[in-house]
Amino acid sequence: MKPRLLCPGPTPVPEETLLELARPVTFHRSAQFRSVLGSVVADLQQVFCTKNPICVLTSSGTGGMEAALTNVIRPGTKILCCISGRWGERWKNIAKAFGAIVIEVTCPYGEANTPAQLAKALAEHPDAAVVTATLSETSTGVRNDIKGLGAVVKDTKAVFIVDAISGLGVMECRTDDWNIDFCVTGSQKALMLPAGLAFVAVSDKGWKRVDEVLTQGPACSFYFDLRKYRENLKNNDTPFTPANTLIKALSHSLARLKTEGMEKVWQRHERMAAAARAAATGLNLKLFARVNPTAGLTVYEIPSGMDGSVLLGRLEKEHGIRIAGGQDTMKGKIIRLAHMGYIDFFEVLAAVSALEMVLADLGHKVESGAGVAAAQRAFSSWKAGA
Ligand SMILES: *Cc1c(COP(=O)(O)O)cnc(C)c1O
Image (cartoon, rainbow, N blue to C red; front, side, top):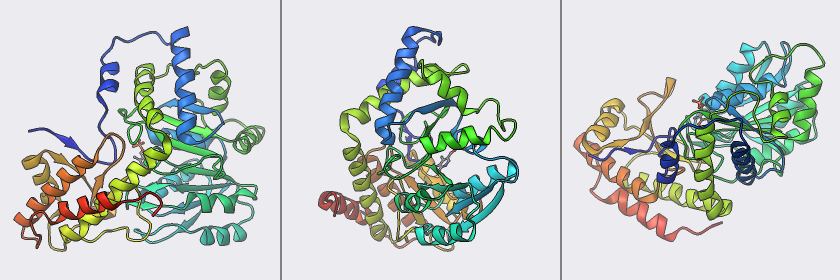
């Protein structure tokens, strides 16, 4: 059976990137490597829509989040965390681990944080030095209005930090225009690589905060001290041994994005997402995020009474389709079908088709082909900007 990976990370890796990963390991302190890193950062700037430097870290995505936070907080710093799911909660947990005072700006799971609610919280806490948010809340399938949230933070003294880990390279994310001071992503989502790299784009306002915090006492982190990355980046270098094999492979995945162009990349994902959402009616399933769905994955509710682990297990065992379940409190309540990066529309159709079969077999009322047909119709009639 052919395994098909449709999870929101890690995601499938294109052939030319895999071939690069198969090549012999090379030394990283070399002119060749510096040239690769220089061009990778330049290509990443297009993906991030930023002119600012991008720190390339050897870690999973959470390392990038920790890097952003530890460079702007000290014990006692007040931070506002916009929370719409488990990933928003991760910001809170990192901040607490380093002794920050966290003010939670929450909304129910399945909904998005609003600029109005953030504006109210900022008015109540004018001493907040940091605001965090999540572009694509992968745990619930919600898209947050980063542009709107950024506009609220812009004229305050706070820096705006965004987890764009499953959203960047999927949907519109304009780091500079949207006033994002620290934009974080990881390698194993839309960037079509294995896990192992994290990226943090830092604005001038962000760097000012970093330099200011470090005058107040010792750094919170040694490995993630972003000043070291900024300094080394001037020579297209890194302070520590980089995952140079992954960085070379990244140049191939980025070439795909560059050739397609970011606007087209965003449209491709929006179109697949529209099709995956339309499939819900045919599958006779409810969408979990009804109002502001993300474009990187679609979250369906598991019909009441059905065992979600049986459903997911059978999809994989009988059809080779690996999709994700819910995390923590959402376990057994939802399934999460990813359509980002190298996952294409026909894999989404395959997953919908397999879902129809297994759901029907588990006694769910679903007509054979109805989900696939609905997805096809939505895909065919999709128009950019409609
Ligand atoms: C996948 C994901 C992360 C992942 O972090 P890792 O440390 O790479 O596991 C963080 N935030 C979001 C929104 C994600 O989708």
